Image (cartoon, rainbow, N blue to C red; front, side, top):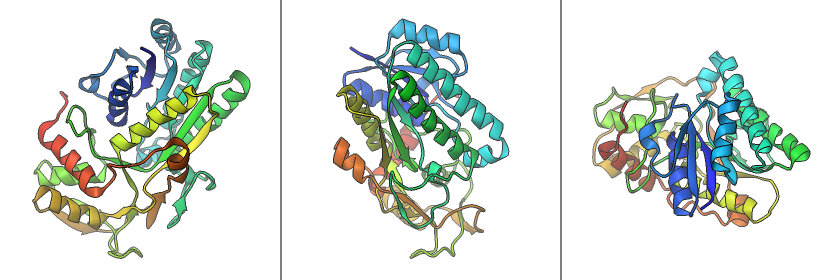
Length: 327
């Protein structure tokens, strides 16, 4: 069986990717420093603890497993924090990725799947983004991801590093079998915050802004089920293994859901009232951010079958009730 090195494999998306890789016949090797990940989430292959900035450790892991590809999720990803502490994001995300890419090319591991972000497009409000949209990131997080994309292109020219880049916004839901799920400390994502409020684990949810130019006055965001998302990453790996060229794919539904729609569907799915309060707008929040996935559907054959609000909330609610990691 072929090994795939999964950086950040102990995190939310990475752990789901490891399960999908295992189901597809690969052996996922998780490489994670556990700063934001959980060793309990490593269930589908070997675990190697290490930091992206540790070249000697990376070299040892490449030598030990001889992976056929890298699936790179490991990154700091909080937009607000990136504006307060840009140095952390450039050091961890960019320099860490450079160290990883250099180690991969030195080991002759030349297939690379990268988890990027639609934040590279910046503030393009109320349009459906596609792969040809201009990239003007407005925060250090998005800028760091765009820099890594540029890096991958340069390493392809110099060393033949073929890559698939995925850009997406909000990820939601959990493994329907409950083996892994979403758990952050601190939590910042809408659906888990809402479910925590329902369960009494935190106070009322705050709805930031109710006067946007949308049907119900609240912001609209694109959500993709985590299982749909990682399925696309496996398809991206197979794309490279089939000898196809480097490619960028957006992943989204092209429509999005408002904050109030998420709350209303949560009430229907959980049969419980969501405690929430209306608050003022947050600086920098756009009215509507959605991403199309026409290219991924046409070229990869990707279909986001689980990315309905009902399914995403139901799977997340199941995990919130039964799943946990030791802290």
